[in-house]
Length: 251
View 1 (tube, rainbow, N blue to C red):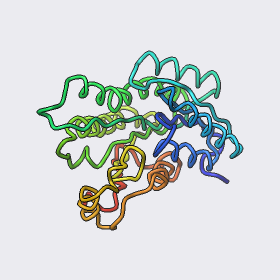
View 2 (spheres, one colour; view 1 turned 90 degrees about the vertical axis):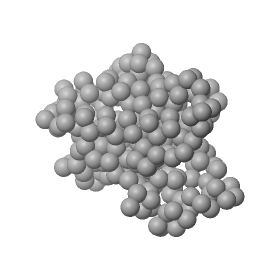
View 3 (cartoon, rainbow, N blue to C red; view 1 turned 45 degrees about the vertical axis):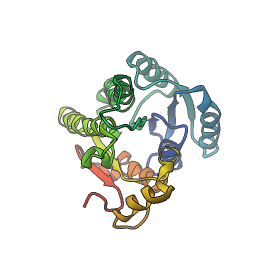
View 4 (cartoon, one colour; view 1 turned 180 degrees about the vertical axis):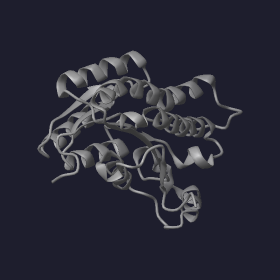
């Protein structure tokens, strides 16, 4: 028996990288998948992912929707409920990084990161809790970051957004625990994706690598494995927690 047979999972920002790995991992374990992507340039990858998930024998649908826009999230969640009939799991994965020293950072750069990384978590959680409360069951998984715990020079906006996710996660866990809805966060370390291509570039990448006790960068599938654990009944007594999947960087 697969861990998520018959469940319906939402994954935001899933056209590539960690989001795509999560969508595939949950589908492999029997979940039907609704996922979002934002830009037209990601449409081809989203269509390919949708096909790959369907080929695993479950239902899947890609939606072009901006998780940072409240109205768009409301429309998206209503569409998922109409199409899939339920929402059991919500993975708030959508995220961007616009790194800059605070001295040079613009208000627009700050707002873009906050809207995509933090406001999106509020937007989506606000929408999915109603069907979860009705079902008296649900798992919400928010993608934070080790940077939200440690901070990092040149990433104040990213760090603030990811730290905010941790506070939000703990608060929602307290609010919804009595309804059997769990809310946890994952704090990935340095993971090899398109967004972190700089990890393999020269001295900067070497400096990051030297700080990781396991001696290597993470893989998207390893974050997906942690997500699967939190989405399934294997973690049925876990809520309000932050799991650092970082190779020991947070020791």
